[in-house]
Length: 255
Image 1: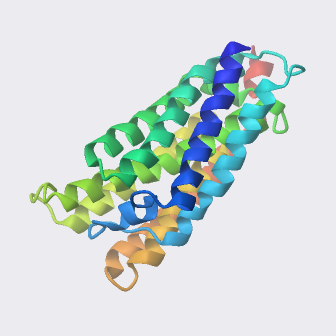
Image 2 (image 1 turned 30 degrees about the horizontal axis):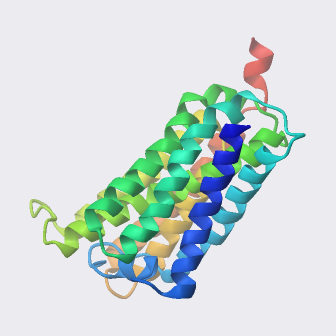
């Protein structure tokens, strides 16, 4: 129960700190930080509205754990402390972005991504064995997969923004190629994780973010925009096929 209360507390911290920054206006907003040096790769502002859904999922995940009637399960146990690290990371990222602590934002966002994505991959077999409507799938895997998926797009975008703003982006290839490589990395991650976990929730935010890049880049960089669109479609279709290609519970049946 101590672990579960800490999970709830850190989820509330991440949500409250983000809302406090918006309401009180201290420092720059996450959107302003992202737009500060987005000459290499830009995502339309509306795409960041996905945080509303992510925060809702985090609340469902954390509140359910704090309820006395919720029993312990393997996935609740294995995702508990990693989710604490991820929630603290995204909460402190808002603070770092507000005060333009650029290096800290990179460390925090990649650290949060690693904390939530690693247990998904490590426990892929257990995730695949869950039924489509299993409570752990709906209230543990889906909320954390949504967070991990969005961070998979946001982390390389954050890195490109910081490197571009500090004139530190390597010049061996053009900025457009760097942006395309970031898109490819996010797309491959979406397909790979969908294949091993058969969880569509991870790929959906990636496709959403890539679609946001298409919208934002149409006027400025047409080739990059349509590259992002093609990647978004490939991730969405590929993840659907990979997620539903096998019947749920096949691992359990094979044991």
